[in-house]
Length: 119
Image 1: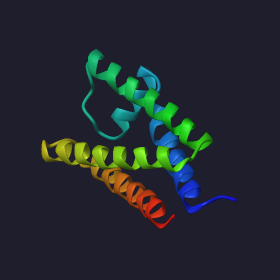
Image 2 (image 1 turned 45 degrees about the vertical axis):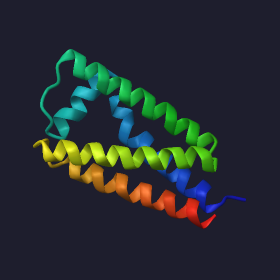
Image 3 (image 1 turned 180 degrees about the horizontal axis):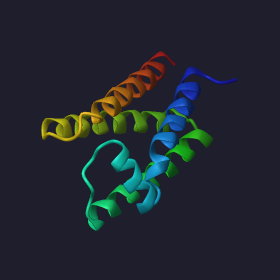
Image 4 (image 1 turned 30 degrees about the vertical axis):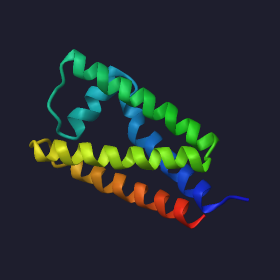
């Protein structure tokens, strides 16, 4: 039987997988950054973008396969931190498209937190 934590955890993992898959390679990351209107990164920034993409995709798969409350709780804290970094980037004049990602992070974080608190 799937619990609310399991359902929201898997849904959040699926969202992360879809949102981050484009950052798995330098070539796809450049295409995605162009698509969202971000400035062209240098090689070092692109390396970190692809490292980020790889880690988030792997973490998504782990949460999809094992949507345990501990992993979903860790992810919820991570979403709060990601939201903070999105606010920081927006504050420093980065592309307003980041606001869409901020809203999505806040949504998934709140949904997962609600499921964790109600269990």
